[in-house]
Amino acid sequence: MAAESSTARVGIVCGSRSDFPVMEKAVEMLGKLDIPCELHAISAHRAPDLLFRFIAGAEKSGIKVFIAGAGGAAHLPGVVAAKTIRPVIGVPIPTQIGGGLDSLLSIVQMPTGIPVATVAVGGAGNAALLAAEILAIADPALQTRLVAFREAQTRAIEEDESNASLRGASAS
Ligand code: RP5
Image (cartoon, rainbow, N blue to C red):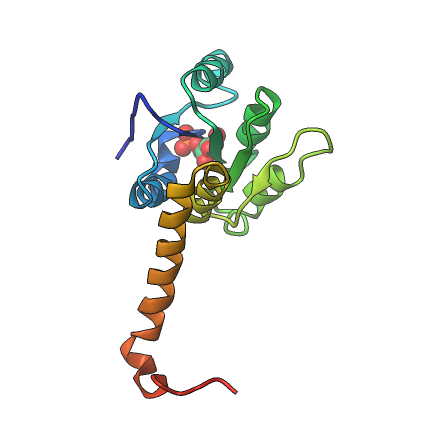
């Protein structure tokens, strides 16, 4: 599922189509929150000029936050961050090496000057939620949707059958 929207507010980019199964979790979460986004596979080392064109165009077209996922020597999020002052959220893609520890360290260890807010390995859903929280600062309707999302999440646990015996019990 490659999302594309002319009114996208979040630009999602990853190093390869092989990253799509992880990054589509971000597309799905943003969809739940009614936030338009677009998803592209653009390798920072195989197609750097196209990546730079995407970033410049995305800023002009109204994208406010970037989510960038990559695996292995995962420089893509740092490169995106180098070319924009919009917030960049990095998603380490799982790999054969320690389950994606290589990707995690490549993304999280950005030297001072160019920040990338890094989520857990494979954590594209949380990347989307963080992007939503950033956008919600200036969007009261989105704040309301985020609060509703949190409440529904809590309710689902409270209503889970395994917790039936705890219903009505007061915390002390
Ligand atoms: C990275 O290399 C990509 O982000 C991907 O996670 C990894 C492997 O890419 P492919 O060889 O599957 O294209 O650039």
